[in-house]
Amino acid sequence: MSQPIEASETVYTAEWLQRTKVATVPATHAAPILGVGPKAVVRAVRDGSIPAIRFGRKMLIPRQVLLEMLHLPDLSDEAPAPGVPEAVSESRGPAVPEQGPAA
Image (cartoon, rainbow, N blue to C red):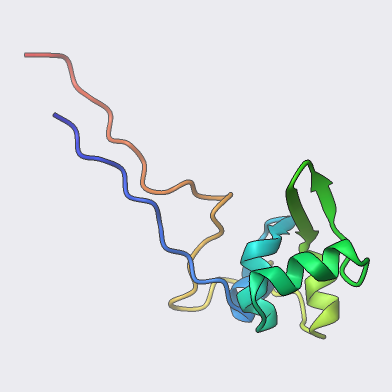
């Protein structure tokens, strides 16, 4: 019997934002980076204060927009700092080990 795959617990910080290579960040993940609650980010997207791409109810904020808002440099071409997790969209959790032939 195979073990269940555990989701990675990425901590969304300004350092993560600087070093990740994702193009967009969900509004709910942008909230801790901006130091506000998710509802505040959603309101800011709705009123146009934060530009976002919308797919139905999902709101994706371009990474570059967040970097510019926070006056942070883009460090995505540099090696990740110790303790900075990889982006969720770059790594969808641990790889599932291949199952050998049934015995």
